[in-house]
Length: 227
Ligand SMILES: Cc1cc2nc3c(=O)[nH]c(=O)nc-3n(C[C@H](O)[C@H](O)[C@H](O)COP(=O)(O)O)c2cc1C
Image (cartoon, rainbow, N blue to C red; front, side, top):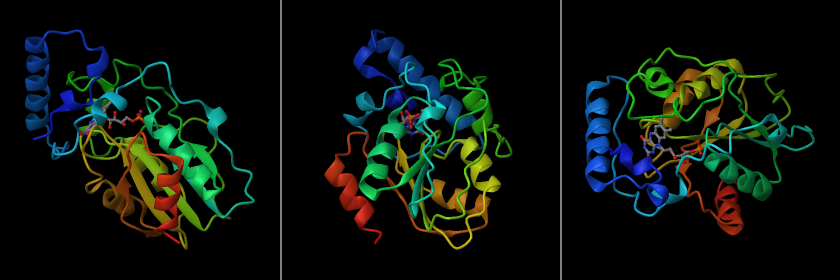
């Protein structure tokens, strides 16, 4: 059973172990009560949890978008707290790709991202498969790209609903689509397949969870594995 305590910032967590255990229990309770969330295996989250800790200072901003359009690959990503953004930038550099950041019309606050709160925005969205948070600004013109990497954090075992908003809003016909995610330890699971189904277009390859500390060389090896 997934323990969302795994996603917390243990490096700066000053709460007592008792309080931590209680919040873990709440997270487990909340996941057990939820229909939409899919608790994931907790096999691989040891040290990763510190690196993926939410960081409210690194909210996405549209300046990350670079769609000059003269390349055949684009890396499209959503990142609430900056982890996926860092990985996306390394992939873009390795793939010599343009980038587009999916920025929510209403940015996620720390309270919105509180998985212990059953009424927090992220919990409410993930419990509603039909939730489609709005995207700020214009969608990218991706017609010229042959290959599209799509990155996101795992939320309750799945891709955040704003990813569904995105894949339902663009045409991916004829393109190779490669999903990737970051997480506190959960694997990519069915999230890529779920997005593929929501999208209804594109040649989706099975993606992968990437480590937040992925090196330039590792990113290059991963990108090159799709050539
Ligand atoms: C609402 C919420 C739910 C999460 N659910 C999971 C989960 O089910 N499994 C997991 O391993 N990590 C989970 N995490 C942790 C994030 O996937 C992880 O911190 C990710 O790297 C954050 O990426 P970002 O900084 O790009 O937003 C969750 C985080 C949030 C905010």
